[in-house]
Length: 192
Ligand code: ZN
View 1 (cartoon, helix red, strand yellow):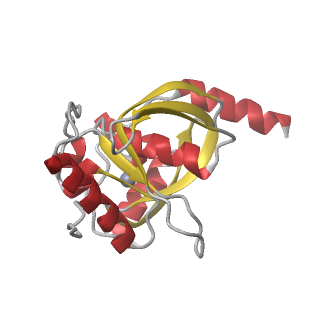
View 2 (cartoon, rainbow, N blue to C red; view 1 turned 30 degrees about the horizontal axis):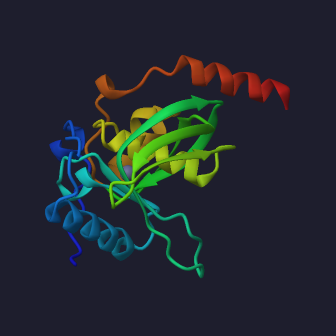
């Protein structure tokens, strides 16, 4: 299908509410196929959410295959994280934030429910703060108008990264208060 231009941070569509997918129409199928093509064309992305190509639908795609491994695109429609626990520090970037990387708080274990590209429901568990667990949270956030820097551990570092790339500064209203994750991370450090 087609490679679509990826929306950059600052575009209001990244903060917009997304619509549930009620039927896998040909329009939705085309959107999914464009998302997969766009993710691979971007080269370094492990995931892409529909708002990142300007479409406010609850859909994201992930491929966590390593370089040299066969591609393995996974489609998540109307995803819902039904369980989350533990905490990890995740060093992340995002295709909508070219060359911006910073540390964010994430849960280490998640269980997500979603439907695949055929509308078949599935449940997936990802643990130990692995790439899949972190990618699922990052992409689910996109569907709620949340972006990774909203979880930034070091706001000053995130601001610096954004300024360097000529992207808009953080609006503090979006910064998430995550005391529970902070507590977990602190107790983890003490145990080392
Ligand atoms: Zn992203």
